Length: 205
Image (cartoon, rainbow, N blue to C red; front, side):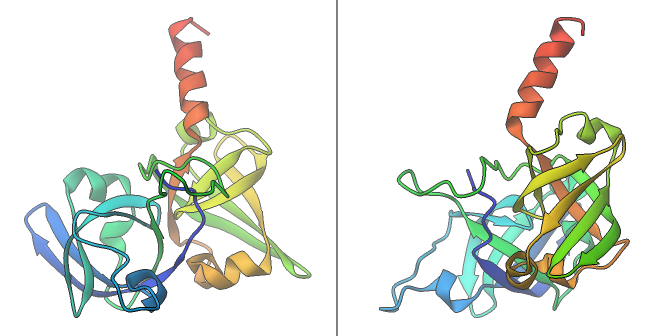
């Protein structure tokens, strides 16, 4: 389980293909890798959200953390479009006694969208994302959504797109500040919306 509060950006150091899957190595920022006393903060088997996609660390070496992404993950996310040198949002899984600062994010990406429009208004930025209607049916204004693993509040929701308002801090500490119109993003809708939609469908509504 994650919160959607990005802890830092990592840089992809290598990508290797193994049939329908890939091995992805990411160099994390030092503050995520080791404590001030030098003790490692992560280990093999730990879960990390990479642009909102929960993957397991399978190796740690000079290239950073290595993960394996299978066919299902690559078909549902934008991870397969990344290249060496690209930066990604990173968040370690939330400890049981941790603070929930964003919303409940599972790290199970529902699909991808693309940035449809970027509008600047002083220090604030409004971003519109175009997504399948099957995803917007699970969204409501002032509700929550995870975009590339970032917990955001929905402003407007239309049939095939939605908007969020971004403060300068979010643009600075996440990869959204580097994005342009047309760039792909991973989308995870609020798990509460999924359950409500399922209940309504089962009741014939």
